[in-house]
Image 1 (cartoon, rainbow, N blue to C red):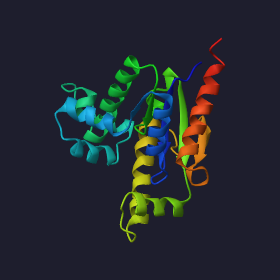
Image 2 (cartoon, rainbow, N blue to C red; image 1 turned 135 degrees about the horizontal axis):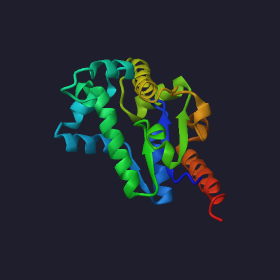
Image 3 (tube, rainbow, N blue to C red; image 1 turned 120 degrees about the horizontal axis):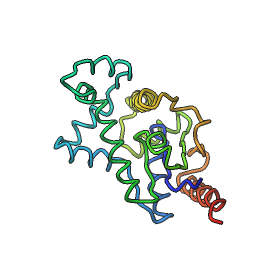
Length: 207
């Protein structure tokens, strides 16, 4: 099965978003990250900042969602907290993009899970803690005395969002097609490796 869509999960400060953009540029395909949140906000008529807060809050378990839907007058989705609704709405947006575009790069948003049946080339970008802290300070302008705390909180939010919504472990490298240490390789080489691996993989199915 061809894997025409590239999904990227990344640790905070690993450069995953930049690597995703570079990959998309090299392949001449579209790149999506925060755009998904903005599209969802536009459809809902809610400010992106408000949805972003909900996206980053801890979602509930699916069992809780089922219990909350016991009221027959309302649908299950009506009873869901906003954090869970954001995941469902973003998933619809992502699938709509996949219906319209055969190939693109998607960073975050549980993309590897949402688009699993369409065939995705799944990438995980990671790096040592100290490298990520220094990157946050230098490139994200995070105060030095707050960088480590912000990094840990961001990773925890991403991990919780992924684990709860997918039933999988965010940092389980076995579920990804390719895992890259950006500290060792650098952004540019990571993007080149992703492109090469993606193209070589899909060549198997072109005949």
